[in-house]
Image 1 (tube, rainbow, N blue to C red):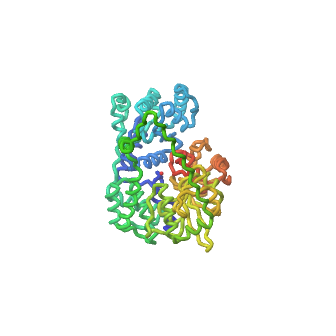
Image 2 (image 1 turned 45 degrees about the horizontal axis):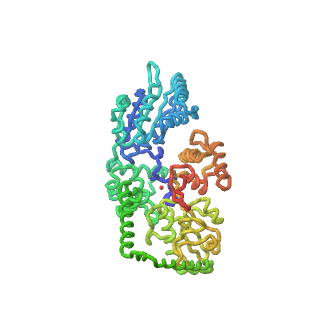
Image 3 (image 1 turned 90 degrees about the vertical axis):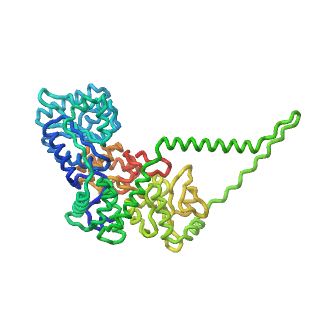
Amino acid sequence: MYRDHFGFTEQPFALTPNPDFLFLSTHHQEGFAHLLYGIDTHAGFIELTGEVGTGKTTLIRTFLNQLDPATHRTALIFNPTLSSLGLLQGINREFGLPCASSERGELLEALNRFLLEESSAGRTVVLVIDEAQNLSAEVLEHIRLISNLETERDKLIQIVLVGQPELKRLLALEELRQLNQRITVRYHLEPMGCDDTREYIRHRIRVAGGGREPVAFTLGAVKKIYRFSKGLPRLINAVCDRALLLAYTRDSREITASMAAEAIIDVRQEEGRRFPLPRKTLQFLTLAAAISIGVTLFNRADKEPSPPAVAGEATPAPAPTAAPAPQPPPLTGDAVRKSLAATAAGDNLLTAANALLGAWQAPAIDRAGRSDDIRTLAARRGFTATEIKGSLDDILRFDAPVLLQVELPDGTSRFLTLTAASNGSFTVVPAVAGKLSLSRGEIEAFWEGRAWMFWKNFHGIPLRTRAGSKGKGVKPLQELLKGAGFYDEKPTGDFDAATEEGIRRFQQSEGLQPDGKAGEKTLALLYRRAGGFFPPGLTGAKGSTQ
């Protein structure tokens, strides 16, 4: 991947929030100052809003990291669909308090005791609720009631509401006027300007490069990226990541305007795939299709009427049912290998890899970007390629589309993508001997047990993270384990014994070698099992988890 090629210590333009890469543009500095002012003055409520992708989440994570643990107690809630009871349970859980009760009174009593103890010890308690625009008015009203926990002189808890501009409109509702009136510190985070965009790109490259700039973006490239992104960090990251992949494939240390334009086209295509048709449009199309089918059936019946029955005339006997057509014999391994060998190795791999990328709804790779190396092909679209050795049952356990590596008699290989599995039948690309579906027996006749899975490391967790590790990858790893039900502690960012044990238990449950290390297969399965991620499934399930 380009990270090693350019000598980056980590991916410079990962889409996941990472305080290590915080770049304080003019607007970010102002937002940061508002947050600090609100907490230092015990304002009670603080509101931070901004459009999607402006860097709100990165800003608040950095802000929380800046608060001294000796003088502050902090919690971050980022599940915006909670009920009022679920929210209260989540708050207590984040502060390490009893949270199993379904009685709000018991939960509030435990929280109040905690707040009084922290206040007596001279510590400030800070609660941050991200994506608050998705909360219901009822839940927001309960947040106001939580803020009523106070002494005669001071608020016991400082609450930061973070969200998109819709949060402003939500708080303006008449039923929330009491809450809205309590918010005394507000800031709306604007996108960056062109100059800040250029410095932002250079900053992230320097951080990932250990103080060096191993690759540079020309001014023309920066201007194109700015015009496309309108200064939104999330879009800047997406384009820069694609541009670095292009530079890697072309062995270039400079991102030109034309390369930025190519990267923008890629990102535009991917963004277009993320938004399905609106529900009303789907309903209209479904109704139109139903009407069309009905009209067709009506016309067919009108044109081919059944002859009327004549009194006293015997009803003709129904025609005998035709015997089912004989099923073709199963393909032999030699027939499959011969069919695959008819296509050149490079063309075959490109077709199979693009079928796998298509399952992820990722842009296809054209012939100019073709490579004979599977890992390189995966990296060009931001994926990791992991080798799987075993049986079809091992593949089904991962429940992911895969490339089957097929060995030919001449010592070369061809590839066949499994895109779906149902009732012992597997959909394949490309077609072999005219067939797009093969049985388990047909596959086992030619496949020798080597396959490749593409997966996405959404959080950029370093591979083989192990006991004793610290850093940005450990806390997301703990959160994944927690989501999968194998870690009960509060994520700390330190790879402790509980983390290692959680990984071992998870690996045992998935039939992996229980070495306690977060390797490729372990991470790929964790993203599927933790919830919140939606990788494509092989058996029709999207993973209980792009």
